[in-house]
Image (tube, rainbow, N blue to C red; front, top):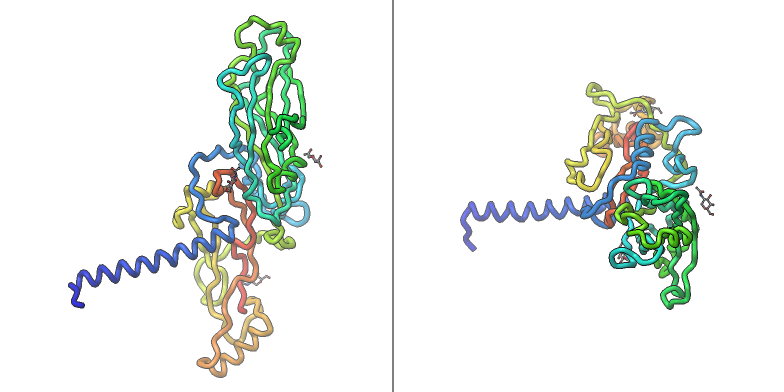
Length: 362
Ligand SMILES: *[C@@H]1O[C@H](CO)[C@@H](O)[C@H](O)[C@H]1NC(C)=O
Ligand SMILES: *[C@@H]1O[C@H](CO)[C@@H](O)[C@H](O)[C@H]1NC(C)=O
Ligand SMILES: *[C@@H]1O[C@H](CO)[C@@H](O)[C@H](O)[C@H]1NC(C)=O
């Protein structure tokens, strides 16, 4: 078949870009897999990053792990629990009433947190529910007015109208901006298939107050004071939390100079790999890489193995038959990344082996 040269060139280019494109997506999916993600997240309705996650992220970044006490990435000091992944799940439930609820009830809502992204071998170590309000109360109209908050666990029984399990009940003189509840036990149970039917959140006025204010218009105040709720879950993914060898070395790779094997400076920007819309922080990090010669005689600073020392001897005798040993990372350190996952949840996760600290001839 005869083709115009320019058309042939265009065709070749199209095929090449196709090959390069699939190569890139294969590499990308391998990397995403190593980060525990099934596909590149594309946040649609991301929730704002909770301040507690920013705080932990900043702590990890500014306090390089010193000996002993410091954060090793496999425990969360803030909550004093083991874990290397902190996820904040947005509520996917819905209101259980149309418009303003009746009686003394101010709010009734199904709360649903989809924990299915937790992998099977992840150990859930903590779960905390946060219920948020835009301002500090439902405008009590009289003295000593009390609100009651109740949280029920939905069960199959509940669906058959045989009641629901009361998890907690608390009275408040005022509803604060943020209420926190320990749901560790409940969330652990949710990981059993079919057990997570959500929670029902109810806020009502205490009955005496409801009676006293009968006839007043909308004693609950504006329902719009309720903002949202979220569930913070800490878990430990064991294969990513090996024994702590994660002390970030203070030294930074020197610039150019010697051609010998050593770490070289490499800054990886997440926007360069097209990940800026789902990685929240950092924007990039100093990853570094290893490059250089491993010549005979192998100097001690090159951290060679006995095998590498022998290989350089053999190489020096017959360079064509045996190559020099390779210059490879021998010590790496972790970083923490804050990102949106495939379901728009906010995740703060600790990743091992992200930064090259030392190189060696191997
Ligand atoms: C929970 O999320 C998974 C995907 O992570 C989805 O397949 C599943 O349908 C969700 N379950 C519910 C009840 O929304
Ligand atoms: C939450 O509850 C669990 C189980 O009752 C308990 O072991 C844990 O210490 C509690 N966590 C906090 C922060 O109170
Ligand atoms: C070899 O290890 C030592 C400390 O163990 C380190 O100071 C040195 O930089 C390492 N060499 C290379 C090439 O990274």
